[in-house]
Image (cartoon, rainbow, N blue to C red; front, side, top):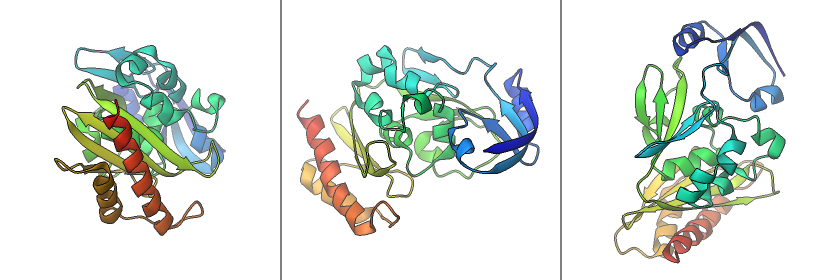
Length: 254
């Protein structure tokens, strides 16, 4: 649960930004994770009146507003037609339909959680984020930026003819992933994002002529893994070899 002294429905991004500069102020997304913790905030900022709940297709990219829900992403026919089933696959295990109908893309990406399924896939797809004051930033840079008082406005998925695959291993169907892997091939070049290590997802590029097995082994050997209640570091390294090889082979078969 969370409590707040002030609740404000922002009428503009500028107003929301000014409110967020106050100590202990928080932008509300779907509030899924906030409800699971205990937090006191001075000002709760609601962005629901700003039209940020739309998925829009442009010539070179898809725009996902910060208030777009995971369920919208999961069921959008335009995303499925362009990217195949990888986007739906990346969110369909997240808790349940009711939760995905509340949880937002903005919250999932802004949090930069190690377990984030959308973050792992979007990183492989070459996504960008648009910040109110910081402008457009590559997601690969954003994941390493410190938390600040800016506001995430939208996420952009570029249209580059990508082919992508998303695979995970979970202890139970709706639990956080023990390990998550997204592979993406663009113009014959492949990258993999490996998330839930349990650190934030990291990108590894496949070398020219490298076999799927050699690529998977290099990912497991160069990335770092840690232990938590879902699995040991050694187990995650083993899963990395399996899942990267599986994702790479899936793209080669297309």
